[in-house]
Length: 213
Image (cartoon, rainbow, N blue to C red; front, side):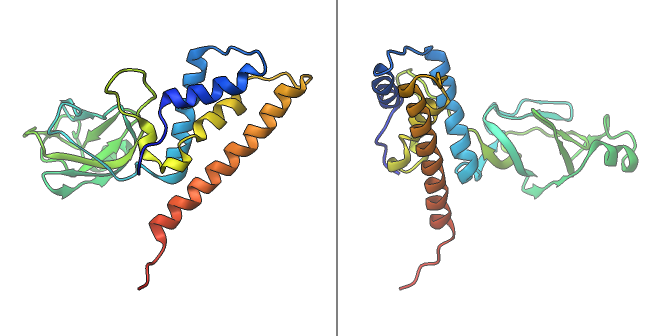
């Protein structure tokens, strides 16, 4: 996936359109909307659903039977401990079927995902780096002006990378009594919807189409 656009390009596009309205939106609001667009695009396409995290780095602080999830983990698919797939369960099931599990020690067999962590059925007796492997859906990196920061648009095919600008222009406030603002809302709402649908279709085709020779 070649990169054609950056956050600067998105800002330039949005600014050029809004200049005709004489509008100067808050920069933080524009960035927030751009990041929201990235999240929607990633969700609709499952672009980052195959992400893998391991505790070979410091992204998984383990305290007792609790491992904090990386901040970019949006959803947990599967969890392994030392090459063995753990079974997903609930706190109620553990309470009913594993007495004293909160203080027990050993090798994990079950996990419960919470909003920001994994809770194991035992306190791991070994926490060697690399034993914990999580596969799931990641959040795209946020837009940043920092030199060397990840450009989240690289996750998407180049001809869809302008789409966040459409979302921003559709979501910024408008006065329905002002024709130019109403037209901006209507135009870019339609363009965002069409672009999102086309992106989803393109990625589904790439994922599922059978090739013949």
